[in-house]
Length: 357
Image (cartoon, rainbow, N blue to C red; front, side, top):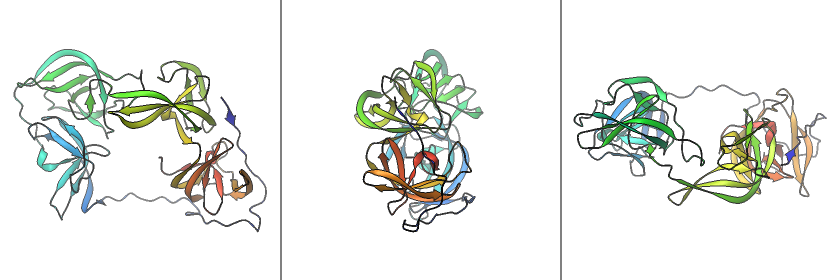
């Protein structure tokens, strides 16, 4: 496992012959979030509440609420879901509720009151659940009929998850008069069946060859001895440090690539994707905003580079807290650099990006 050292330049600013670049914001500004936004031909308004699936056989969820054509999930009949926004389309007349970060359900498929499914019976049954989609929070209930909502959200593990990572245990199920499972009982309370859940982890994982560099996140990165991330070495990589990786754990679901879940730093020393940002070798597009913020010394200026004859040459400084538009990434000597345009680069570990890809 090989660590790379950072280079900071504490000398004079850019020489007269170097290219100039213009910061987007000289001093970071605070911007208030808008209360509404447009999506397609609709208007999205933040809102909170619970809807119940009223369509017989369940309801599809969609990634395009203005047109409701791209299906990305399915919610069980009678199940209840918290929503965080409502879309209204003046052109099509469609309205939809946002029940996750990327999933919307049509108003015509839901009710604001619990859906009648006959008598609900709680039965003892144990097992584990796995989340199939990212969500803003899953409503939990005090009763199997899901009429008495809890105030909090169930903190459940998102999948695809690495092998060996536990699902969420349940100890009871709720069954309606049609024999359908309508809810599961977790430690946090009752949650609706279907839609977000699998009873078995559907992802398949393989180790693939591939080299690149990872930057450790702000909380550090524990080192594991296996790609399933079940056995720790007791050691943690320092926040902001950079390391080469030589292979990664690839997840697939129904034959479709889902994610890189862990990275091998050599000698079966693995780190989890959640703890690092990974960059494959080569050049990639990265349209982003970079803020100068060297972790060890946030008030320091950091080096600016030019790429000359296959190497990075320091040519000046970028002020602390200044912001710059980026265009692509390049790995040179095992270190990651962001392009600022005009053959001007900055070391990735000396600041932060606004958007994570």
